[in-house]
Amino acid sequence: MKRSTTRALIALALIASTVGGYGCAALSQIGNLRNLQFQLGAVQGFRLNGVDISRISQPSDVSPMDMVRLGQAIATKTMPVEFTLNVNARNPNTPTAGAQPTPLYLSRLDWRLKIDGRETIAGVVNRQLEIPAGGQTTVIPLTMQLDLYKFFADRGLNDMINLATAIGGARGSSSRLELLAKVQVTIPGIPTPINYPGEISIVDRQFSN
Image (cartoon, rainbow, N blue to C red):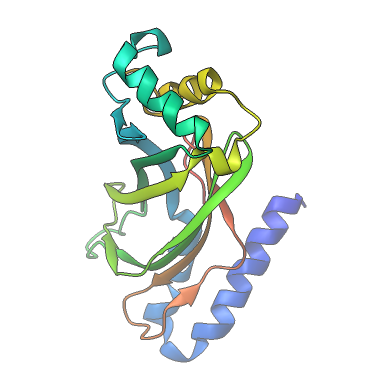
């Protein structure tokens, strides 16, 4: 048996043991947890020390005035960054004939952000979000604020602009980002939220579960 399959079975067994007292209807929803999926979506509103990077296609598009502003920031050993990272959540479960579609509810998401493989900041989404059944995507916007210099002091100004443009520029993407997340889900019919065992890696290339 493959290791990933073994981990999935163990995870479901642990979850089942926590909800065994809530009846067959609730237990029938356990398998749905395995199919809950996440993917990194678009990066929006990327600003590097106040400079709007989202309109820039390549580093050479940065105006001379903005270059002076960025140079002054790095001279003081700081480079504040802010942007919105959208996380797509999908519940592809489809109801059986004659049954009502059953949504899942994300009740908590603890996350850690990696940029180019380096761990940076962490945060938490601590509010309930409905993820409908049937494959409809729910977008979870995460506000990111960090000092890029703190984590990439070994890189010069041009490299930082290149990184910012690759992530949040006009042709940027979330491909250089990774979100490590712990997921807590509420299942209809079960009053206690369920913590899914372990962390999941959320990237842009595919949906993770």
